[in-house]
Image (tube, rainbow, N blue to C red; front, top):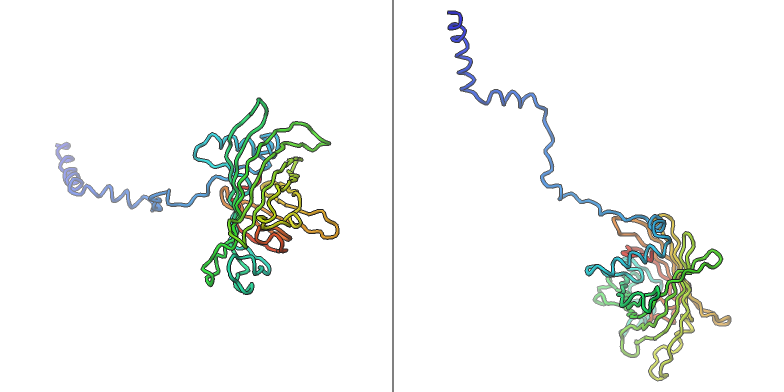
Length: 327
């Protein structure tokens, strides 16, 4: 009798639960705290590319500043989708030249007011290995190409022309040297031949051919290069710049100093003539930006920044990004 009464009392409750199956879910939902809506696609969020190790860290692992670059160049030689850098690759969208000369653009310009003081300078430089360990020695043979352009990108009055482009193909052989001179390590000696021209016809054509030897030394935090050259003589009638050595001299001295993930580079040229001394100085500073990209500031003062200006002193400064550094 008691069991029958209990069953009779519970039956309406069971029926109510069966008639409202959402009650339990609604109760749980009311008790659960509100949650933030998850991101539907995480790939939509910009993520910084992995930043490479600092130059100093790579140098510690690979027995020196020069060696860390050489080891990475060897790895690129085996990758069909990678181009090996030669000289630095950079873009300077804001590059200010003080007082551009009238004859620094291959066109009929009456005065320098037609040229903008601010232009876009960039350099592309790559190399390709032809052979390693020739004749059983620790050496390598390379071909290289460097292009440096000065683009009047913001000069709508002249339809944004390329004011000057210098083309520089070369071939050289690199030798590893292991001797130590007074704590300075002459790591490599390069011997090569190089052609440089601006691709214009007369009277704006500029070109010369040289053979050179470069001696690369290294200290704990710096790399230096002494690079003398000899100009291959040309027919006097065909020579568009017979006095180029008077302004660009017979060689150059370059260097890179490393401070953690920052670097300072320089280039010095001088004709070594006491009575008519001429030369050039270039300074650069790089710093990390985003991933492998580096900020770059460059300053130049002197002769020979470009072939069209080889016999005119120029002063310029610019800022932009460096894609590949010396080290």
